[in-house]
Structure formats: C-alpha cells, structure tokens
Length: 338
Image (cartoon, rainbow, N blue to C red; front, top):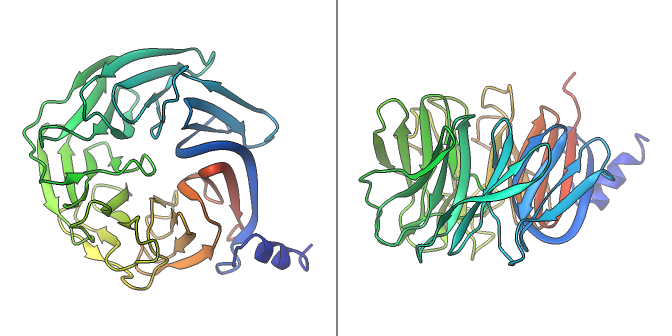
C-alpha cells in the first residue's frame, strides 16, 4: 500500500504536504452547486441549487438523503444550525428563510424578505439562541437579519456601506464570531471588516489592505481563532490566477490587517478555515482551482491539490476536511502527526 499511495495521490491531482495527506475520496456526485456545509451527527449536511438540501454519512457514504425545500428552483448558498434545526435562505428576491427539523427533516418557511435587493450571502449562528444573516441592500445601509430566541427581525444599525460595497455568497463564510464579537467581511469596490460587539450592540468598521475597487474583488471568507487572531482570503473571481493582496491576517481583532503571501499563493480563494486545536497555526483554504495549506499562521501557503471546482470546506476533526462545490462533496484525510 505504501508503494501505491503516492501514485494514487498524483492521479487525484494531489501533491503531499509534509507527507500529511492520507486519502481523498468523493462521497457525493450530483448535478448541484454547493456553497454551504454543516457537520452534525457524523454527517455532512449541505444546501445548494434547485432547492436541494441533504446529507451524506461520513462513515457510510451510501447512507445519504436529499430533499427539495421548494417546488421553485431556489438557490441556497447558506446553511446554519442550532441544537434542534438547520436554517437556510435562498439568494435573490423574494428570500425565504427555511427551518428544517434535525430529527424529522420536516421544514417550514418561517420568515421572508421581499425587498428587491434581497440577496443573502451568509447565515451564521453565534450560539444556540442567536444568529445573523447578511444580505445585499438597496439603500447603502448594512442589512442584517437577526434570529434571537426563536424570533426573526431586522437588526437595527446605522452603518453606511460605500458605493459598490457588498459581499460574496461564495462559501457562507463572510461571517465569523466568538462569544464576544461578530465579524462581517464586505467586498467589491470596498472591502472592509465590520465588528459587532455583542454586549454593547455597537458596530465598528475597519479598512483592510485586501485587493478591492472592482465588483469582483475583495474578501470572500474569514475565520477567527479568538478575539484577536483572524484570517481573511479572497481575490478576484474574474482573474483566478491573480494572487496579489488576497490574503491577510489580524492580531488585534480585525482593527488592523497584514497582507500575507502576496504573489506567493495559489490565487483566488473562496473559503478559509482554521484547524481545530492548532491555535491558529494550521489553516486550510480552497478556491475554484486549488486546495492550499498553511502551517505558520497564514504567512506562507502550499498548494496541496489541483482539484478544481470546490468552493467551501469544513474541518470534521483535526485530520479530516470536507470539501464541496460543483457537483460533488469530497473528504480529505490527513496523516496523524503522531
């Protein structure tokens, strides 16, 4: 087996990163675009195009189920969960907020946004009782839906967005949180970080050095380890190979950002996730054309796969990562350090 494995990895378009990759397996093939994932009950849960929602069992990929949440061909690019339910909202107007019971998979349309500009980019639970969904807006004001203690409402704020500043529904990951803060990343002609203090309700806005200025540029994904360290990735989806000023890290909770690996990374990136229990040192990222890995807090990156068509990733545990995108869900296992 040891003699065969390197050839298998090459066949899959994967090059080893410090001999860490053990296997790479596709567990779902379907005519679907998936940009949002959740892990629950040893299963990968997903939402996608054509109103599709479902799961694949990580222990037995033959155990899978898919349902349609609507007779309309809705596009879902968001997925979130609390203790009892999954939640998703479609892009474009009218936007329907669905609640799906985890036990029965029965679903309901609990809330709607009929404004013309409704386009929900991300849905994120801070804890079991509080969540936020981020939408494009028609009046240059930050638009958030808040779900709190079972109630839906528009989150009142006075944050003004710049002309051409919006967000990208690329991987459901332009919102991140800790117990203290929620961060939201914008993109387009301006790409900034908005930090909501959960205690005071105050939102602070910080500029970033990430590439911006065109509607296709900016931050696409963020992740935070704690109230200090965070990472942002993105680029320009019209220029997949462009890799200048598309990765940045912060050590002060998003107030200031430092560009990393400019000109020395694999290009346009749609999702970034910090490895659990690595204290921020190890990070995985994915774009349409690559899967990349950092083992030094995002300062340098190694492309570990040329596999194309992935948009979103999620850690299952310290050795297992799930990827999804165009027509597939795949699982990468890394060799244990021990």
